[in-house]
Picture 1 (tube, helix red, strand yellow):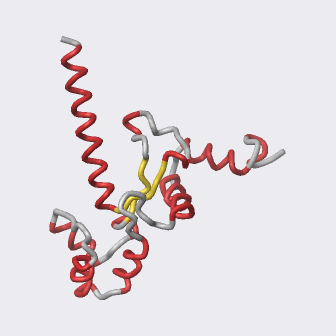
Picture 2 (picture 1 turned 135 degrees about the vertical axis):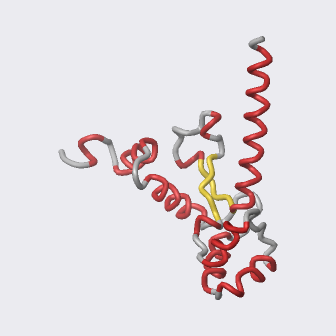
Length: 146
């Protein structure tokens, strides 16, 4: 037996192994698989972030800011990030493949069942919540070791 069959019981098992191993195109594959499942729709606020990306990309740079504001999109805080978004929008500016159970909390080796689509603003909120949880956990770990 050669190829996938020599190491894995099926193509599905092989893909799970690749996702868990990581490697050079793993984040692209993960995004692709999450997109196949959820079509770029944020699982928190339900905005179709992929459709917004396609709409914004089709506009001229001068029209993009107004369209983003009309969509109630949370704009990047830094002027450089905002300029990049307006001049050269990328799919990753609009939606993220997010770990439901954060990698920092033990969710790194999970499969697709631990991933969801989040629009970039919701992802930023979730990331800030994670930072707060980790800060509290680290503070309590320090306090308990005294």
